[in-house]
Length: 220
Image 1: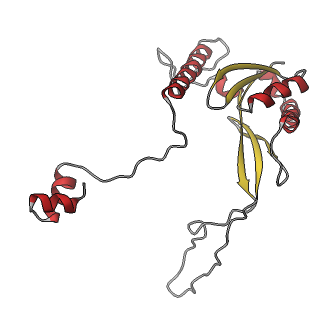
Image 2: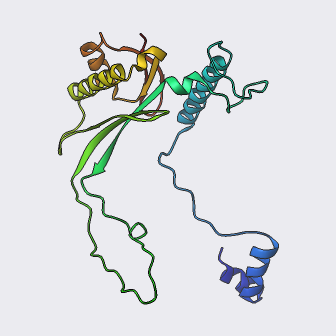
Image 3: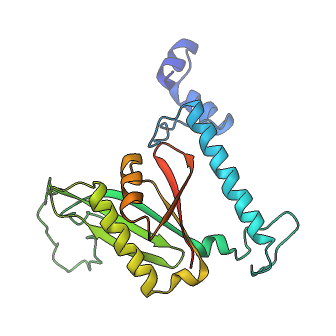
């Protein structure tokens, strides 16, 4: 119901309705929050279960002898340095435009009253996009793999990407600490890949989300 409708129904000024609604009652009009997925109850329960498992893993690692504690309180403190975060490598895929124009806010500059007004032409995004696969850990990006224009990820390409990731991990000597790779490839690609590069990776499916979630352990 709008303020105008309330004012007409109660036969009072709109300013009075606005004052009562905003100042006295504390109401304000807001838009609905945008969410990327419309989750069912089953999906919500899955995410709660996954979060609980990760929390349990975190708390178990806090209790290990090789974990460095920073002000840990009884029951676990998330300010503690936990080896789970150091060992976790996350991977994901996303589409990216070949050219992303500079936004109006990004192009803002300081201007003196006597300075000339800067001008810029409106540039459209290129319709063409490329598929990008990225892997990162707590220190930053480890691998960025960009496919040629027009290509999509398939089993062979995904296996090739994992092979490059393996090489990067070996060069950076990350295997010394033990790696847990969290990724969500297509389920078919996952098993085709395990048959192709299984000698390098031990793929252990754990839980299912909207996309198959896989933990890949790379132990020394």
